[in-house]
Image (cartoon, rainbow, N blue to C red; front, side, top):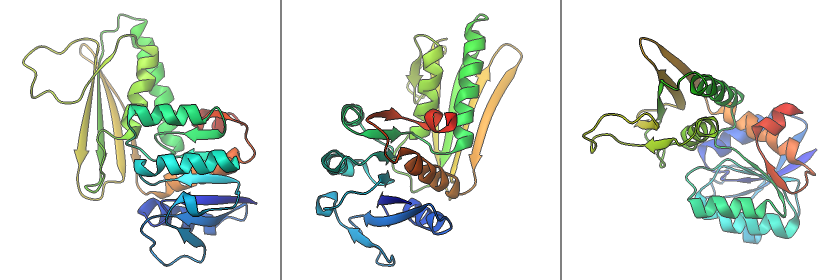
Amino acid sequence: MTKVVLSGCSGKMGHAIVKAISERNDVEVACGVDAYNCGDYSFTVYSSFEEIKEKYDAIIDFSNPAVLDTMLAYAAEYSVPAVICTTGYSAEQVDKIKKASEQIGIFYSGNMSLGINLMVELCKMAAKVFANHGDNFDIELIEKHHNLKLDAPSGTALMIANAISEVSADKQYVYDRHAYRKKRDKNEIGIHSVRGGTIVGEHEVIFAGHDEVLSIKHEAHSKEVFAVGSINAAVFMKNKQSGMYDMSDLLAE
């Protein structure tokens, strides 16, 4: 049995994770952490990681970047691996996550969906093929989310763009073109954010070439796909040694 600390338990993803865990027999929520206790859980909900005085098997974090420091402090003190699913971190905070992985196991991904992670690999494959054959395809990335999402572009969009950049040299991210009065540069990856309604999450990468276009697209129709992915990651991370882990490590097992 894997006992998890659920950070952000009162949010929409928190509720989705609690529901998904209730349908399994290999994992349970030991306690939650949320500054806004929704009050409808049977487990204890703490307002801060500083209040937790016990060691558990893993943390699942779908909260807010402001929680990072106290979460990492708890994880380091009690040697608890963390599954970090929160997005919107600054570059400095990402550096803190990487530094913390020298002491504890950290599973860090901009998206916990199996389909999205397959999409990432397909985009890398396409970018590599095009780069090896003239690199004459322009790359544009469009992401769509609900009107309550705070960060833009999404963490998943950046994850996809970063993956493409790994196999395509000297790529520059362009987030808004209205201020530009010039032709599109060949090394650009255009990243565009749409916020509206109750869209759970859509990501599309367009490779636009001469007289042909390749589109690779993923749609999430419910938050359950992310909940299930994070739970599987928490079970995977139980007893893991220090280091950075992601979905490719989980899929390889």
